[in-house]
Length: 267
Image (tube, rainbow, N blue to C red):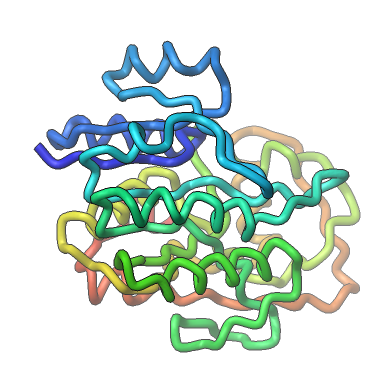
């Protein structure tokens, strides 16, 4: 049985681990919470308490990576509010452990925030020019991993993440003066995130970069208004006088290269 290590068993990593277990993979999973170790173990995941910081990596990383040919890195940068870490340094500190392990393939979960709004249509051919700190650090981390010759890295850039338990309309319902009414949405459902990751693994699509966004781009006002109606929530109100700026992220390569069919194309 092939073993896969997932660095970061959170909102996406945990259900991903469960899906991989169902497909007969062995899975090691990391968490930064001691309370979660038992939860991982109960799911059949080999649990490890691992924390990455700018200065060091704590926890038994060697055991976490032992016998794993594939490592999935799924930890987002913490760059909001008062938290302002150096995410690139955090990932750089774990690379020596990867180099010493038997890992030959790395899947890095990135974000479409590596692109700015300058282009109306964005594909993997578009040169990323991030204008946010998070986007800049994600791009540097992508390059750090892809330039390492010890393993092959595939970068997966997700759009806005939604799921049955996580949808932006729950925060936008009833709010007023929302901007960017005509900007297109670029979202992806958790179910498709997991499906695409499994497809990358099953088709051995390494040394690649993919944008992963549902092929559905109505305006923010159209989409969130309809979602509020569907869920019987208070309608969000947008400012119609503002100039809407936004890009459409094209995720065609997921469908053409991976031959992946979206489970939730209309979100």
